[in-house]
Image 1 (cartoon, rainbow, N blue to C red):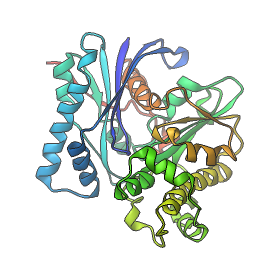
Image 2 (image 1 turned 60 degrees about the vertical axis):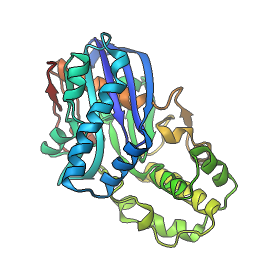
Image 3 (image 1 turned 90 degrees about the vertical axis):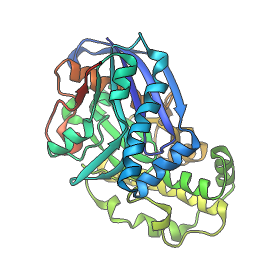
Length: 346
């Protein structure tokens, strides 16, 4: 079956689309990636998404929900006649487990544009089943990247940093959680400084880490909490960090050091030794961050680090369509569920 996965992450930079072919079930899964497409949000739409993450009025949220749905449908039009099923993550604008998780992007527009069923609402189902609503990609990571006899971690450096560690393809070995901020703070600082992403990386490369600020930030209680745990931009905002360096280069470098050090803390405290760390997400393109992580972890940057998450949502939809469990409770803290809701074509 050919399935289209759409992923909009906490970096809020746009949508990644992956068309993949799957065969077999969870016990004998086969797959191949056919096409990857990256479609950025237009600047006004991205600004509205970021504003929604900070709090917005009811009308703003309603209009954005439908405008994102239309945006997804337009981004997916190249796959008309190719996809038989769609898996949609939606754009998370608020994540506060166990109370709520909230994704925008009306799925009906995709079902109407492509004429195929759209599976969505994965996080809400997991939350209702006692989970944190994340990380949903843990089980797909195990099925897609497990290697016999190898302890592998798939580590996503999106706006928020999360990992999935496992031995072979054994579900009982799976451990998954958010380690803390990914590149959301760095991106926020770069935007405030009026820098393009590559300009910000160049500036950070020559900066010095402010050790006092870094120590203070690493004292955040989230880093001490054991898994399962998830977090979001509601917690990791630039304005919430005290003692920020005034020098732009030092600020950017220290923010990347916070991400790197919090990641390393997570491996030391909760994961242990691994044979390989597969880096995915937009932050895997940040050479300064990758270099900091490579000093202590066996890092391998995925060939295309933006494929992992939309591929995972395509697989979530595929397993849903087969009537199989697609979210493991040991990853999210709930129970094993067949998560999702579906909009049929019309």
